[in-house]
Length: 428
Image (cartoon, rainbow, N blue to C red; front, side, top):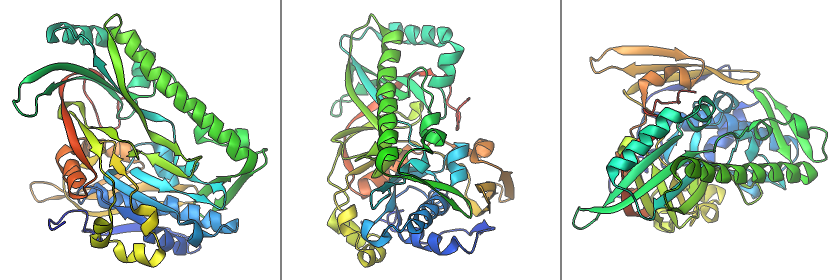
């Protein structure tokens, strides 16, 4: 904890302006800010993401208060993991939510986490039982690339999804262990998430509540509506798991392989009390996957966040004042991996609000020449040329500084099967 890092940051390194903020919502952004905590790596996207999240989380608090929920006793919060970042999902960022975090938002039986758009996405890690030689594996991977259908390509390559082959070196000798693995980061062939993202199908059910905030609606579920939504989510999560297994069978049978782990990192926990939005929670062994050319770390999760960490954290005064020690201590969070980062330092950032949410981002980037380049976009995906996936070193540094987990082994990239080259935000 002696080393300066994002563990200790509490102040922005550049101005971030929110334009057209309603005075009615402003006090709830202040309440949200007190309940947003971060160990996100770096001082670029890691500082912007919580500012955007204040909007979505502030709207949640506003809406819950409108229905009479007790915010103080329910202790909602947002916790950014080391891979905390923004999102290229247009609807999610418009609503005021980012990525690489855990959201707790159940208030007096009302679940509100679904506003940040869970979809049951996850990782499946397979090991070949008797792997063929690398030449055969690579040729098979290339054959898969050539024969992937357009429909498969769209579904398997959305966002930062990928499928890749890996090998492992012995941690002592450095020699190839001969073991070969496949990691699938996707939702299977064809899973439509609209019922999880929108609420038209629930509006007439008992327990459905919709609150119109000054910057977009928030829906809160209880009773039968809550039950229906959770069943729908569970169905989609199971479909995603089955889909990843089917992809593996379609691509690699008759080779013999075994499933080592199948973990959802974008889904609801404890009946919607929590939303994992690009994180793992209370799992023993987890993959922390980066862009395929940076490989994947397999971690054994430590009991975190521990008491010593909390007391040395920049947020401790807030945590103590609000009584959040029990909420955060031993939460056992780990990052799921990559996340987007700006290639260049930032000197300023702003975004606008309207009645529907966020829009019109403006980022001032410091080029290596020293010149400032102003980049404007409606959504983050429009400025992906200025962003990178490469965050392994800073993310793993934060993992170890916060004592979140210990490395088990490092999966080295052999070949990325799909897409052939990862582009921030994906091809689709």
